[in-house]
Amino acid sequence: MGRDQFQVIGVNIDEDPSDGVRFACEIPVSYPLVSDMQTEVLTAYEVKSMPTGFLLDRKGRIIARHRGFREKDKPRLRDTIIAAVDQTE
Image 1: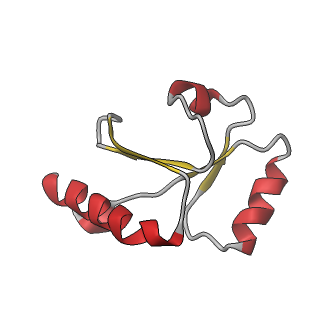
Image 2: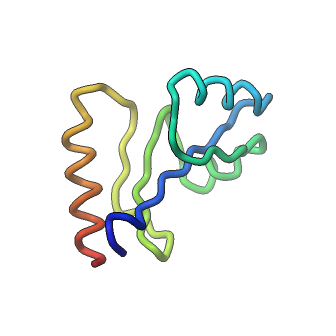
Image 3: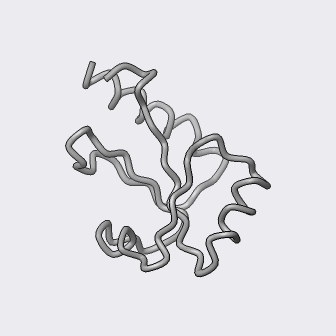
C-alpha cells in the first residue's frame, strides 16, 4: 500500500447526523464521514473517549490507537502513520 492509498474515514456518532456534518464543514475535514447512530463502531472498537483514532491495516487489525487530540500530537501521529504505511509497501 503506497502513501497515496492511505484512507481516513470519520465516524459520526451524533444522534442527528447533520450535527456531525455541520462540525466537519466548520473544521473543515477532507475525508469521508460516515454515520454510526447505533454506536456499533464505538462498541466494536471499545472507544472510551472522543476523539479516538485508530490506524488499521488492510485486514482491519488495529496497529495504533490514539485518544484525544492536541496540536502538539500531530508530528508523532504523522510519524506513526508514515511508518505503518511504509511497512506495508
